[in-house]
Each structure stands twice: as C-alpha cells, then as structure tokens.
Amino acid sequence: MSIIEVNNLSKYYGRAKARGIVDVSFSVEEGEIFGFIGPNGAGKSTTIRLFLSLIYPSSGTAKIFGQDCIQFGPEIRQEIGYLPSEVFYYEGMKVLDLLKYSASFYKKDCTKRLHELADIMELDMTRRIDDLSYGNKKKVGIVQGLLHQPKLIVLDEPTSGLDPLMQRKFFNLIREENERGATIFFSSHILGEVQKMCSRVAIIKEGSIINIQDIKTLQKDNYKKITVAGNGLDEKQFEVAGVSNLEQENGAVNFFFRGDINLIMRLISQQEVVDVTIEEPTLEEIFMHYYE
Image 1 (tube, rainbow, N blue to C red):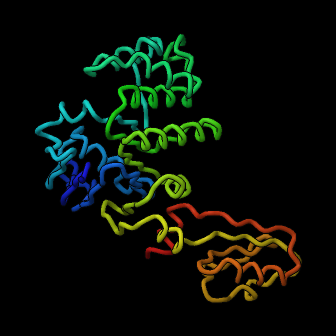
Image 2: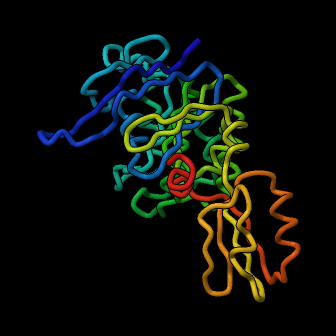
C-alpha cells in the first residue's frame, strides 16, 4: 500500500511564476524509510509542505493514506508527525507546557510517550523556550513530532543543530519507530545520513525529480572525494579511468573517483604520500560532477 502518492505536483510563486517545483511524482510504500535528497533550494521543503497541505499546489495532486491531502487534511494530520527544517515556538512558554499543548491536538493520551522521548533526547522540560539553544529547540521539535506515535513521520533536515551523540540517538529512535510500523519520509542534503537510514531515494534538482533508485544502486554509483598530499606529486599520475575533476593545489592532488576503490588505493600506494583523505562529496558536488 502506498502511504504517500504524489502525482505531477507543481508550485509557482507570485505573478512572476517563480519556480517552486515542477511535475513532481513519486510514491512511498507502507513501512518504508524513503529518502528525499537534493541540494539546498532544490524544492525539498516545498514538496513536503505541499503534500502536507500546508501550502496549496499550482497543479497536481497528493494523497496520504489513500486520501486527498487537501480535502482530508485535518484527519490525515492526526496520524502524521512532522519535523520542519526550522522550528519556531511561543518563546514565553516552558517546554513541558508547549509539549502538553501539542499533545492536546491528538485524540489519545500522549503523556507517557512524551516523557519517554524527553528522556531519550535529554530534554529539560522545565526550561523556557526562549532560553534554549538551537539544538535544544530541535530536540523539542523531535519530541513534538513523535509524541503521538504517528503512522507517518516526515523529517525535513532533522539533524541540523544536533551534536553527533544526539544524532546517533535520533537515528536509533527513528529506526525503532520504523520497526513499530511507522513509515518514514526523510529529507536531507547530507548524503551520508540518507545512505545510513533509507532503502530507496528520490533525487530532486532545480524543482524536478531526476532519479528514483534504491540506496544500494546509489552507493555503488557514487563518487568518492579524494585528497592526496605528498612530496613530488604530479596530477597526471592520477589520470586513470574513473577519475574526474583532477586538480593540484598547495602540494596536494584533489579529484573525484568512481569505481573499484582498490584500484585507486594501489595507485596512491605507489606515491610518496604524506596524507590521504577519502570522503563523501556533498550532494551539490555529486550533482555537478555526476548527474550533469
């Protein structure tokens, strides 16, 4: 069963018809952890706000749980947990009061789960919202989005502001929610997060879906960003199949590589190397050097 069905969804803003998204279509199956990736400004948040009926489309349709998102918006949102990329609250309230207020919108007792989540995220509920750091406000958003044990969890850049320890706890929490049966829609511009969490991804660029594929295929085809520092290096030594964007700067050679990593490691081992860095490129870099 498809939990989210998006068909030819488009959004234009203002008289100038500024592009939001154009003819976006995809579906998310029940129990899936679905990734939605693209560089900043690609249209990720716009797409989410449209299928949550927080804004209205210029054309196209979206359904959640088989129901039209606009016509049945209030009913659908009873079973959705949403963490936006930016969180804003009534700053004069205490954390506990705000979470109790949020819980009052649902037709169930959320008290026990509220306290469980606050303990997991190490959230001090006695503090006032305006005294919290950005990271702690994000924790409030996580608890708020999960306290009613929703069937669908929509996460838009969820880890921004969280330190590495909290990020790990958050990912464990989301996996537990998925194991209990929740479907997860995970939007991010950080490829590593999506690769760890998701089974399938949609890739959006400049407002349009350019690919939908399973995560194993994405990992297999993905570039690595490699920097080799050493004595007497010549960038021409790295001109082999799979290498692109080759450049030399400040005694180091930088390039992207796609292919058998053992091949490039053997090539590096033949050089007089001081340091080697291998990392994932940003999505912006992948789009520039792969999808173009």
